[in-house]
Image (tube, rainbow, N blue to C red; front, side, top):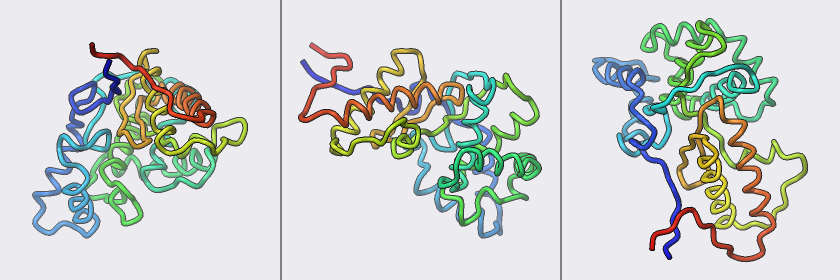
Length: 239
């Protein structure tokens, strides 16, 4: 019996984010782009080679799911937007406030990203991911609850400890931790949650299902923290 893990890749539930791709193409045609745009294009050549971008700004889910309210998506769109702009240390209420206070900025960027280039500032770790998040949030501002969303919202395992009700034990080594997180992501897919992963502890899902995915990944961390030795995780098998 051969064990294997399920990994999503471009073409398996994901498609090209045509709007972000168009802006990247138009930026590349500029004869004298501003420094921020040049930086974004340089990062594009390194981080966003087509077929290699697991769930960054150039891709989105093929299936759209509605953003209903804070518990089912709106809050996670805010969290994702702040993360793409490098704001990871502030508590959730602080992140929600930061996003809400900049509503006009998001609309300006979405209306003309090549004129309003804050999404590509030096402080932004991944400009194309930030641009995709801005497009999605600006659309939500106009549409409101119920907006169909295809944006892959990032959930990183290093952030899951903040959701735990008690401190996470430190017994699990890196291999076991990543294996059990991958098992948990598989179980989430079996439950109908669309999940993409990079194999290194970063996951993406719809905003509407991000909280559900967090619960599955938390369970994976709990299992990993209690394993004393290698335990196989069977996720389908080939004879």
